Length: 142
Length: 191
Image (cartoon, rainbow over all chains, first blue to last red; front, side, top):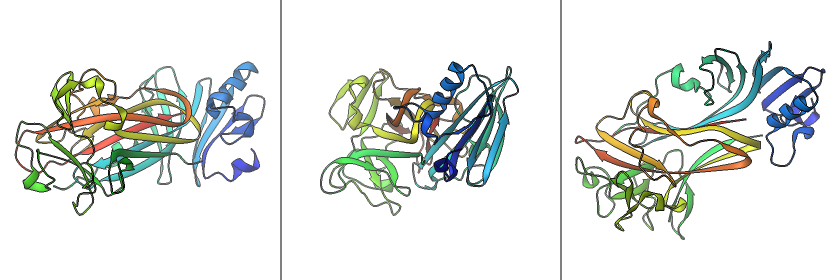
């Protein structure tokens, strides 16, 4: 883990099968406009390696998944809500790690407010929104 | 290492028409034809579509008095009335006439999924008492099913970059009298 990455408040960290560890702030993964995760996947592929484990973190909260033979992916999600007549507004932001199992995609999601693990159908790229199922949303008032 | 979503629209907040962020306590306000009037004075007649679009603050004061964002009114499946200018094809709406969702990613990220929808009491519910249609800039037809989480409008994926822009439009028609409440939700997933 680089010195820069160790200061990050949120992001991901991944372990390759050769023992090396990378974060999304690692200079080796900052290539042109590329996504650092996609760059890590490319590094693993050309090196004949696998991504054995990955974690996402937000402050002191984190979720770590082992690959267990499955593909891992790390990323983020943002949701913007705007009350059309006032009320609920604002953005929520999450970090997630996903293990792509044969019959389900398992999502580990974290934010500054909590950590969640969610099963979702295979192939659905939209990260589940914990706020959607954690509690009913408040109504805007007329 | 911060990622942000910002909703913006072009209007004149004073000093000229510019792409302006919609603040956390601001509201989108659709009304009937005529000068800005919040509440019953501006109420859209039942089973007709919006003829005015305004941005108001938490106190319901108009923020766009110097120049309104373009009103996009549903006419038929493939047509729209832009700011009262008459009926034109929906796919002629330009980006500056739309709501702009800007996703900023640091480090750069690839958008793997993006969508929007409008909901009522819960995300699964459609807003009561109205019809709401939407489109993404460039679409040839209105999406008449953007209400409730089971009917999101897919905004697609996009390649890796620091910023990603989406442009959408909405039109609303009350089906009953009274204030309409709902929440517009945009979602972006990135790698």
